[in-house]
Image (cartoon, rainbow, N blue to C red; front, side, top):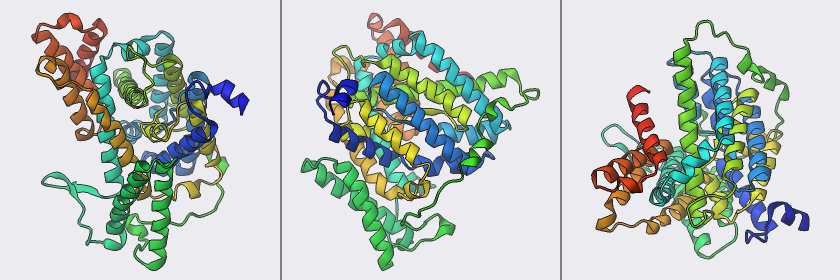
Length: 456
């Protein structure tokens, strides 16, 4: 115990081993869906699903281990959602590049990230963002991940007229309807546990919702339908074929660039770089703000090693055979469960490594069971809205914060929220005679964001 305390400075961070282990397990359970989703998405790019699963587990392990020991922060890394979709459906499907070329672009992006991290560029960007936008990012991510939870559970569904609407529970009740209902009931149960200050309430909420789901399957309220994507809620026990990793390992170097336009390839690299940079920034800002990890000047201690860990994970993931590995916003669930040090990240890292052996068990966790965790964590991050000032004299700061918040869920992107927040912040301060209050880095960022919308 004392050795762990010395390594991770548990007492100094007002935490203990039990809390950190529970937080790491909570984070893993909340983001374990990536083990099912990422292989499915990258399979559409022509990659072997089992190989992608192994690569994802290993990349998550490496990235989270780096975060634990290099930065001593409770952030966990894995293959980023959105970035994997861009990889499969834009770079490979639309642009017509092979998945090997796409992996090479991700690998190069990671190397560039490492260089930027060593030269303090990413750290300077983080520190230049004003506190009002940092608080807004935390709130925006809260709404964003709650939206993800509602979607993944099938509570929020597509509507051709209004874009989104609530599910009609009575239609397909034994599949979609009961899953959505269980997600809402699980959210209420998790909220009850949290109100009662039950340690590990978010984790217990996930497990309880899953168990109730299995009971529903036993009594016939839930009926598996593989054709529609509704599978048995009971985990299966099987081992993974490790030899399949050879189908993706090192394939980022097995490419033919003769038919690849250099300009287009640079654009692809920059696109990966741009989204990864600001998604990571947004996650670090939002989660650390909510956890009270920022100092009086709004800076995150150990930021540089945290960014470096993220960059190393990206290149390692590409070498292994997965799309961009990045800091996960679901780390907020572990932080909300009390995680404050690298021991949380280490716990999740070990679980990702173990999941290589029993992947079918972990991937059996249904999305409706993890949705309550995302929704409740979203609320906890949303409460940071009280830190924003909405007085008339501060509209040049509060309006950009508002735009940042609403953009994240509406555009389904953390980086887009930051983008609009920074552009509007700089513009409104310029036109309202407050230009001197804006740091030079913010002006550079605003110009780069505008150029992104013009050329990318």
